[in-house]
Length: 548
Image (cartoon, rainbow, N blue to C red; front, side, top):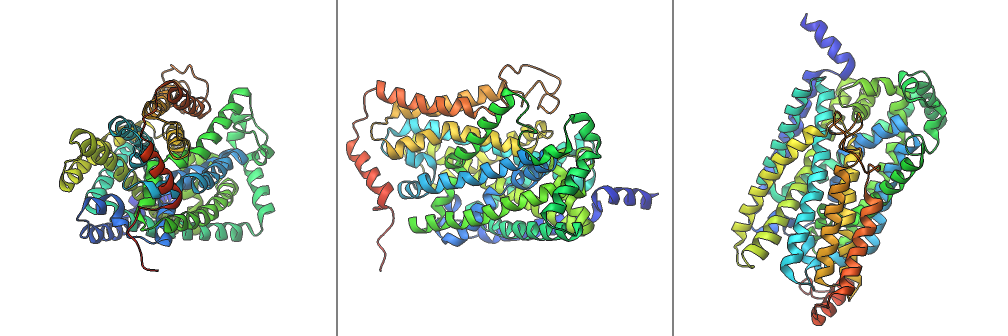
């Protein structure tokens, strides 16, 4: 009897026992790395930024590891497999965003700050109100991102173990949350960075192998890939329900071209993706883990190369999943769209290959959530506890302790919300985090760096406008209620038509920062403004002199 059950399980999702064994091996290795690194975490700067000891190449790998999350791998491949061209637009948005970060944000941020984004924002403004606002926006961005990763991990393990029962999927999300908390508490930023570097190499290598095997199995190039993907869609049940032509997966508009609302939704999503990276606190914090501004620039260049290559390959994997697995199997699997990548791995390389790829994806989730948790905890400990509550008089040991308490609380909240969001595509969930980052953080960062008249009242107004408008519109959108894929599918209070709020909230935050700065008196901190301008452009005063 057991053999029959195992065989049945194996046919749909590989061998669950094998899958668990590979997982366990990955967890043991990464935990060993974290423990080793944790031994050298002594000061607050070690916990937050790894002591600024990483080279540009190492940091570029770690940034890639941080950025190529479960959304990039599971969500985008699923979106391309089911929606074709419109799904690939996530990849384009996520990638182009890096150019914005490189041109406008990376080097000036590194030159001005020390640990967190708030260090930059409060440099020439009044400390307390700005730090509190920055910490609140960091918390919400990190929380949305964490929810996406938790949902991704739940989907992934559900596919691997063939768990269709919601209750057990929820247990999986809980275990991921607990593992993340342990990673961060033990290893700090050093441990997390090493895990991210290892994971980036493994993920990119895994994806390259998957692309090669996909073409080998199809016995042809791109034309064979696209033809078979169209044929699979044409013969599927999904096409009967969706009411679309199979050839539409090669054209724009299958998901976002139905009417004016969906077109506006797409523009909104695109704006959020492109502008979001420049406001993501966990990515910005990465610029402080290198010793110089030159290395910060180099690390972004490395990241762009790795991330660009990866996103081009998601196109092959997405259409590969459509051609070799088909939309019906993807939609029927636990996790829905998020299961496309693991099912493709099973199809092209068998159960062992699927287990390895899934273990890499799981390590991806762990590395990303650990980075996010550190960022949020650093923001609470450094910006609110140290700078506001204790007026800059707390010890480093106290700051690290507050950080650790924050990680535990944040982990618990992320687990609960991650369970509610398991039905959503993880790429879409991440786009909501990007919308919050682009609305709350980016306007304030750009104004702080490039506009001398910008003042404290403008900064606070911009951040709170961005965060509150974003949260309210997401809550009132179809993403939370009113559609079968919502967080609450049986309720309906969606009065805002767009799933992604960026089209409204980003201009609103820019406008609030501008109008309030003009209407309120300047801070009259001219010396600090001049110093910030020089530091952001030249890097003078950031590091100790070096021998040339």
